Length: 255
Ligand SMILES: Nc1ncnc2c1ncn2[C@@H]1O[C@H](COP(=O)(O)OP(=O)(O)OP(=O)(O)O)[C@@H](O)[C@H]1O
Image (cartoon, rainbow, N blue to C red; front, side, top):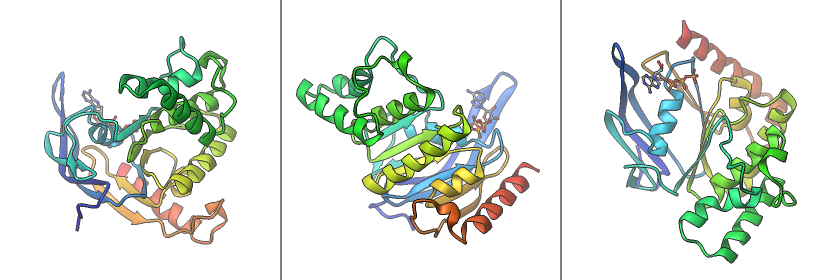
């Protein structure tokens, strides 16, 4: 049963796009409630509505049916309580790293000193304490994505949303960032919703795992991970069976 303490509650969510040749049903009958501090990872075949789900929670889109509440408040549009990280970090090239992280705080009218302080803290959290003065074009792909995470965390959102945040990175950088996000999640206790194509990544990161069916996306698996919060969950005996269950659910959903 959803409770008012839940960080996110999605009730009867359905979404249809208006395509050129008629309506495109993207999601159907999504009921989901997420307690504060969970990291929900959503996987599913291509086109199953993963990004749509995240855009609805972010408030970039309004659902055709149903209601979404974040921290007990109905979502009517984007808000500082929900930070978003995209697959391609959309940083402003004319601003320094620190100014990029401060950007949302500046538009919210946070005083300069406080902005600097917060940006410094967030950059330190993502391992970029010394990069504040750099320009974004001087950064590697992994560093750019760290800056995007620091920027999303700057307004201290209750919920962090990540749309395939490591999809464009090489395998080594990807693993390093997965470890960092795990550490960040443990340290901050943030509620996170992320999406990925990679079931290994899903099981490494998620405390809760949801699989969507092929379009229109419906929830076909919703499982609490149960793996201990160890530095490397892949070493846990429960890792492989959970990954296999998830992979079979995704395969069945795509068939
Ligand atoms: N703006 C749009 N207009 C019309 N149809 C859309 C629009 N955006 C997405 N769709 C359709 O909605 C469905 C779900 O798209 P969505 O991007 O949410 O899926 P996804 O699971 O994130 O896919 P992928 O894994 O390939 O990124 C797809 O069939 C897609 O073609």
